[in-house]
Image: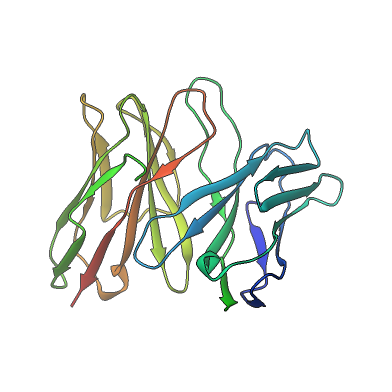
Length: 116
Length: 112
């Protein structure tokens, strides 16, 4: 129930194409779903996040689509660029009043390579 | 730069030894989280502290312990080290009542 399943494990996209990464969760108590981007040798950096009360959130070229009934969410990277080549992690968390977010449960990561 | 500082960046030590990893959270953040990232296990939650108190525990080994000090910095202590403990250890912090967690650059631990 605590798992977050992420796919695909790796993804190769041509420059200008759309990258799509999918995640699924079981625990309906999760109420915060961030996506993190990690470059080699660096820590994960928050890219975009969504709460389950909305079905889509867009920030620049990055969009999260959220399907509450299916317990799935996905990251879409439009007009993918070589600089987007990184590992992407989805995560799920439960909020707790007064102490910030609860622990993140991370997906296993997707290694994205965008070809020039 | 996330504002979370971890030291050291790299650490090489022998099996059986003990090491301490240090984390300074972002200014004002009361929550500190420790995660372990290994090739085969991904990012695994170890432990969370909030304003000096342990708040949540993950799959943290008994050989590992952590604490958060009054100035809010945190230390992760790893003892009786084994080869399998080699990994990247990340610290993250979040402000009160915020769902965002900000990660440091990590400490790469190599046990030989």
